[in-house]
Length: 168
Ligand SMILES: [Zn+2]
Image (cartoon, rainbow, N blue to C red; front, side):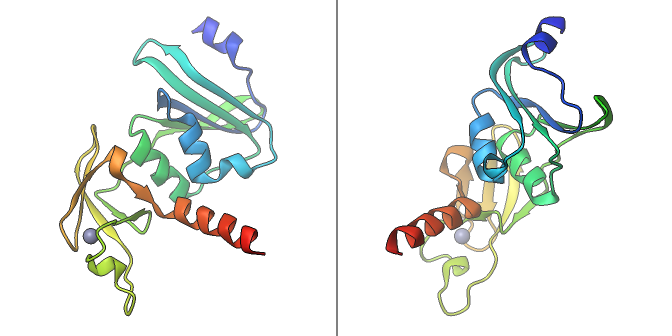
C-alpha cells in the first residue's frame, strides 16, 4: 500500500481511476478522450495490486468523468473504481457499473444488421450477457461479441477526423 503511494503521486483535485485491468489504461485514455486533455496525468501500468496481482491506474488533475466515459471504462474494466479528489482527499469513490444494455457506444460490424442500414440508421444496442469475460449481443441481429471483437463508436469518429485532416 505504502509502496504504491510512493510510486504514484497524490493529486490535489481531479479523478483517480483505479483497479483498471492490467494493460487497459492506454486503451481507456484513448477511448474516453482523456488523452487529449492538457492536464497533468499520471499513468501506472502493471502496478502490483493485492486484490488483482497487477492493475493499471490513471490519475488526472482537474478532470471529472461524464456518464459516457464511465460506461466506456466499465466495458473495458468492470472492476475499475473512480475516486473524486478535492484538496488531496477522496470526496467520493464508486465502482463503475456496466449497464444491462449498452447503447450507441459500440458498433455492430455485421453489415446486414439493421443498425448499419444507410436509409434509416438506428442507434446500436447490445445486451450484456456476461460481465467478465465480457459477452454482449446485438439486440437487432443477435450477433455475439467478446471484448476483443468490440468496435467502439468513438474510435471510429476519431479515425474519421484523422482522415478528414489528411484530405484537407
Ligand atoms: Zn447487429
